[in-house]
Image 1: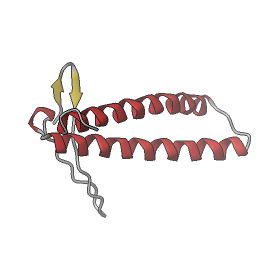
Image 2: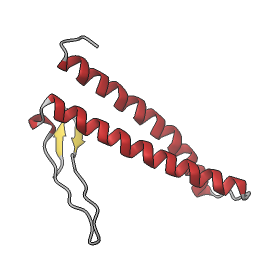
Image 3: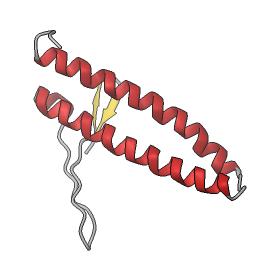
Image 4: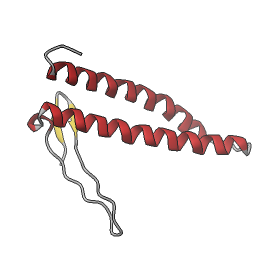
Length: 105
């Protein structure tokens, strides 16, 4: 279930991989503790970092073979977007941590 907070739809999930699939649960952002919010943002940052690295390896392999398609161009543009989102997540994590420590960092 997704929840809208300040015009943004937020969804939290924990994934457990198994032979059958994944198990996901969501908790509304406004019901999370600061610690849960930080953990959720850090998990999202880790997943996005892994995605970006996986795509970079894919693009590098294709470039080494001399392959270039419109999809590769789109993935290159996604790399920029992913970097911007990672910077945003890092800023949010920093802000949550400052809030948790009363402005001390």
